[in-house]
Length: 464
Image 1 (cartoon, rainbow, N blue to C red):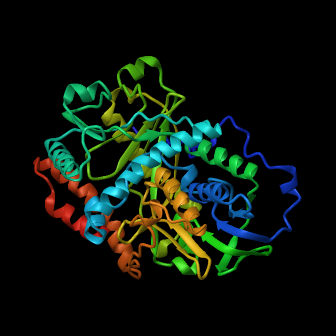
Image 2 (cartoon, rainbow, N blue to C red):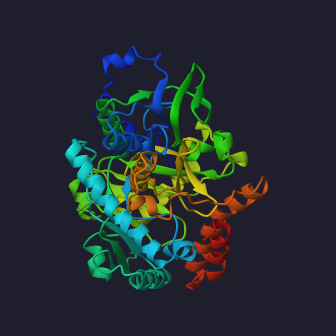
Image 3 (cartoon, rainbow, N blue to C red):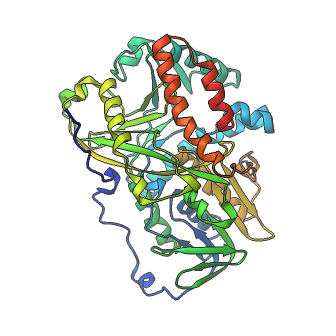
């Protein structure tokens, strides 16, 4: 029986809020082009940067330029994991910057979760934020062994049970009733939220602060002091690029990141009886210990929103709306979710969507600012940007305002990643990552032994 096509639409766009409140004065202010700060990209990083810039210096005249609409990119399409996860490892940070800096970086992520929780509460942004932790279900002995090794490693950096806990089978099933459960690894600090509600809420806040947001404004190029769009040129002493995967469209960022596509599906709202067989009552995010990345959450309206990698990288770092949907990946996600929770076998899947995220060559995000040129940027979150973008926005705002703070001394500041290889080398290498992750999972399932050699190759290609 051929599985039915999953409707190609983004769940997060179906929100009760009509949209962003645009002050009448801004509707008639489109000829204003002189600002202190112009930010390219109205996703999380741009919005948070504008917000904290105003807190640092309320006199600043700030503009956000967005090619589409607020939250159009990864900020409005992600899995809603507001997590403590960083794309780079503690060991990679320690190797380049020392153990103390690695610990400081992870502690900054823990503090960021509290910052987002407190700010959204204070600002009245209702984005369904729930800090229920994140549970990784361990479903094979190999997954369990990797989790034990990872926890021991985290303990060596000083992160104890108040941050990460190994759970036995019964403890895990009390949280999530996935099939073949042997145990679990609980990250106690992470949260989930509604991605688009956060975008809309932030946009309303920064507009109220006085920041101008110009949507449907296609930026063609930028240099020190100015930003050229299709209709006019904006002038500013500071120009910041916060465009994540879409950065590849600018000459300054060619080969600095690549756009990797991640896909999602969502179920219909599930009944209380179905949820009694799944769990997730406290709304932790969830995944399992396989090599191919998957991620899910129980939404505030009682659906399962579930995503994963597996879509191809497109030659030349091409980004196209045609690539925002992939029924092949969607069907694999449905199969994976039904395998995790057999009660979903007859469930209707009502949404499918996706989009590109940005990956630097060494999987390390960067926050940079040059006071001599007034140019800055932030991004490269490799899918871990919901929380990291807040840290980046705060940091970028402090750098622009010449504030020396704990976060401006973190190793992510002015980090330099080497460029991605030229084509066709990166096309072959990047698409090999997906196939190798699938091969590693297949080999481990077939043999019961860890696919160490395959994982070593994956780490080599991805800069791990």
